[in-house]
Image (cartoon, one colour):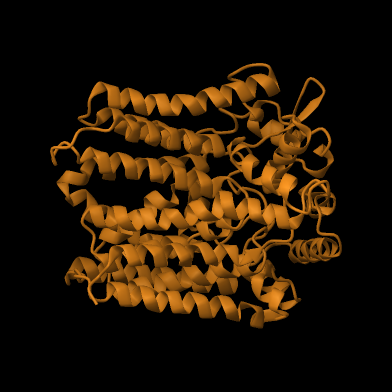
Length: 529
């Protein structure tokens, strides 16, 4: 059967949609809960303040006697139509402020669907840029299952939404940049849509303002008519105006962000440092962001090491050098930003969550790298091993824990804690509840392999450089295994206390799975500091 890209794309969408949709985390912590509270206030109370729910989160801002979510409002605003339908047409209307079912549907529609579409867009764009189908598929799988993007596809955190929308904007601009060579005109609506998506990315995660700025420079650098470039800026201006109106309504000034009015003292003090908490990158923190077991980008996701070889190969394609420069700037900019952030660890999380919006830009290079099947498989399996257990188990680990997977996630699973999943609806328990997902994903994976196996493939070019690179990847993967086996938190009592809190909160949520019983870090952190 000849290679059929459209069949591959449908299978990819299903694969990437079902993986996070299969799970539901029973506990919502402040990062996601704050966004849900704003959503409840808008739909149920017709207000932007969260006064009625402010006691449920420490992620809040205050202004003139009212409390507001301190998060970027985009995720909540995009979820309004979904939640409105649930509240007005579903049987739960008039019930508690937010049921677990409502939270799940909101998350799947606003985060899970864009995540699945992103895989399709990344695959198609890689083919457009000259990658062969097999490596393009390997790239998408590395991003979708070997990065913490999978974790955030199952959370209403805004990070995954920002990454998806930003890459959608980039893909549109790359596609229309080739119109002149083909004799087609530059469609202003496409530029407007790209600008709107870039603005939405920034509206759902303030850090994505960095990507939006880079995309604006890229759009203005294209050999396109002035009207097309102005259309891009116009699309971004729509979201900028929406944010300005939100700021004006909540904090009395169009340019006054929520982070200038944080309620929690520690957060407010941190945000006062530098520019909203961002100072010059610190070398020690940079090393932790890249390589530490607690939050390291290349520790949790070693498959992204293949992006280094991919960047070199993509840069060598002179026709794509401008795009390589843009994506490289996004990656480096985010890493340096994270290394200069006062709360660089991201709080209760797994991996460097602040880097999630840039992950599709980094992973995209994998499709073009000169790497062997061995190095890919080893790095991919090690990445999936760390990410999957956070999805199956618990994706919220205190920042004080030095080795989250070994010290908290796996022990909690051994004690009986797992995320709720669709297999449990079939009365399956423990590892058996994962069987339906394994069977479905396995079948889709086999179908995907059959789709691309007949596609032309560019094998890795043998040579000294390939051997050195593969050797470095394998050595680093071996070092990760050693650190997983040896790194431990000091004092050990902190680990026991963290497990106790997580298991206690899980038990409480099982008893009453509603917003009123949602756990917050305020009480938890008081016990582990």
